[in-house]
Amino acid sequence: MTENTSLSGFIAIVGRPNVGKSTLLNHLIGQKVSITSRKAQTTRHRIHGILTEGAAQFVFVDTPGFQTQHTNALNRGMNRVVTASLRDVHAVLFVIEARHFDERDRQVLELLPQDKPVILVINKADLMKDKSELLPFIEQVSVLRKFDAIVPVSARKDRQLDTLLGAIRPYLAEGEHLYAEDDITDRNERFLAAELLREKVFRFTGEELPYSVSVVIEQFRQEGKLRRIHAAILVDKEAHKIMLIGKKGEKLKEIATQARLDMEKLFDGKVFLEVFVKVRSGWADSAQMLKTLGYE
Image (cartoon, rainbow, N blue to C red):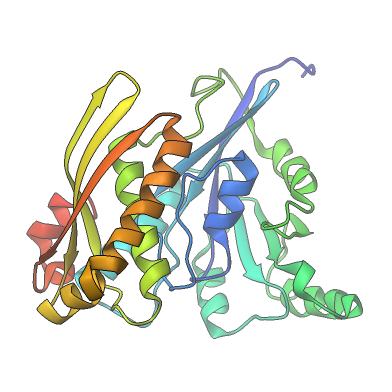
């Protein structure tokens, strides 16, 4: 194999909720395509992030955090997304948080296929005040499985990401690239707009609003470089709607403004965004609604 041989491969990013999988994906490809927040289970869909470096194309598959506690239809559907993602990849990044490894991580580790290369990614390594604690922590985790590589990183600060790419590269397959050189995701703008708005809902409501919130793009029109987007935020109860709108509509206005700014940056053009809040009780346990929203 020469330096100019085309290589490509799918790499699953797997771990329990809130270890930084989406942040890792975004920083690997240099653009936000997967939303992040402190609220667990922010990612609900399988999202491909694409990085092309010369002859090598890395297709990262960001998956929902595997849910072991809640068993509504939404979470069961997301768990199916995780297990399906593992079947068709060339390698797996098992992401954990530095100094924090518990039963939830162990349960995810047990789900990983034995016939795929697994790279242990220890994220948030920069938060370890005493770096001498890192080696004992690595030894503690590495006895649980023979990992093909172990790479401590700080996704948020772009540290050791080149080292991580170097560890993945041997597992890419020879063959033509699957996507164009300048593609960064396989998701369309309509999907990305919904995700960016959902991210801002979580960021501006914190723990106040329950997890069962979703976004539907009801209208998406492009006129030159201007995009006109009408979106609905779905909540379970009238009280959640009041909470989300805020006093004199200020909270909803801030959510919409910040989402619009992110959309304009990602789409490289002006966005006119109108946002409404609608009550749809029990949507997270409705098979029909989940199918409509693309969760099944």
